[in-house]
Image (cartoon, one colour):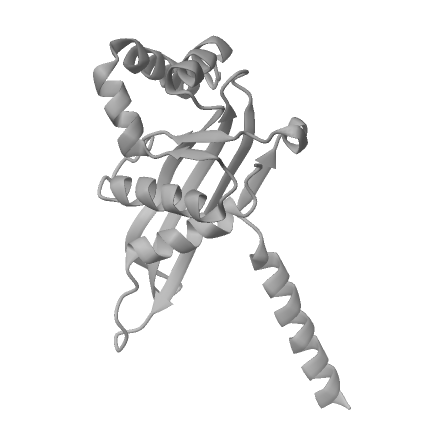
Length: 199
């Protein structure tokens, strides 16, 4: 009898742990997002990459690929395409720099600048990307490949942040196994996040 009770407790613990780990680390969605269905979306260059500069191109490309895979949008403007537009338009470059500066310093998503960026790039929304971790490390004596990403989805016409989320995955490996590639872990993080993105 005590063995059955013990097994039931273990099973309950595993189920609760699985449920607890199923969601994102955090996900804040604007109530208006239920009516938010942008046909065209752009991916901004990674913001505040800090010590993980090598993650920049990987994360930008992976997020674009995962969004295209979903087939939710008529058009996905990747970071490379957006950067080409910025290079040929000083006005767009200034609008983006001013917008990101206000967002970083004042936590203010300027609706006028957002609208201007949307009109100039011909998109209805844009994704802001942040990299929180991109490294091999040790956690609780386990060797892990860790990738952490944050995303914000902004409605271009209003500057409203429709979704703000973050997640990380720490994939464990041992000496006998090959280290998981960080881009592969990043793709897992992006896929898990984008499933919850309003579209």
